[in-house]
Length: 345
Image 1 (cartoon, one colour):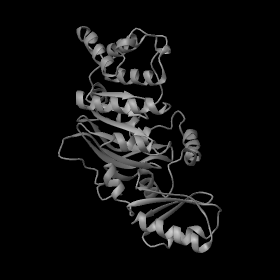
Image 2: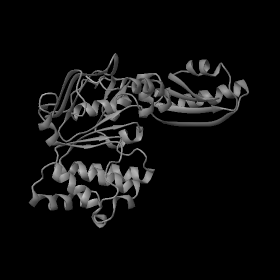
Image 3: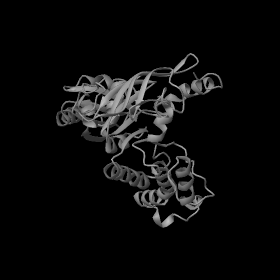
Image 4: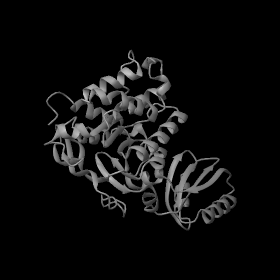
């Protein structure tokens, strides 16, 4: 875990406090004793591949599934002992789009406002405010099925805000969106945080999303919290100030060993045949060494670039692998087999 990963935010009060929380399905532990705190007004991200335990953590914190062990306190209320109090104070945006496609945007919001017992005199005001906040005022009377994917996601976010929650949970909020719509959602969430004084906890498997949007990030892998800190703290916790990406015109078994022994190199990750991602203390020195080495060996470099450390490098550093969905499919299959009636406890 990173040096900053003591689980504590700044001096602001905690909106969420999770202590050694566990979720078991039969003999399988989907979440394994995770602890962290989220300060009021913070955007906190749970980063990891599909199947890492991110959604399970959110489902426990939002009272949708019981906690097997440990404790979660949300808005000052224990989720196991005071679930109704927690539900009144939170908004939840699931990964799937759940608004009724046959109703208008306004009708979807109205139903949700009634479910949360928003007073009749307050409903119209709240609906107008959240539609404006997500830039859907012009489409309030449009059937939801006629909205684009990005607009439907914004409607889901508006629906989660219509009862004025204090804490906002978003499970993979931009999954399935095109890059332009994804950036629009990021901008909207930052605006909502500033204007509505919201605390947000979101899950994502997009590195850029976590980097651009979150004040702090918890990296989750196989049910464990493996690193926690601000994006900059996490990047600084990885040895090597730069990343050099190099591709040779042919693959050779000795490349990784040769690269590992270059001066200043702290890590070498093979990406594909002949392509390597190198963490180094000096990008310029390593670049010169690569050019000299290729010349001495009579080899050709087909590409060579230098960049700063990214969250991809952080994830590889703490987990030993890249954040790729296909690497967790076997675990997801096992998990699915365990999620049968009677297994949740």
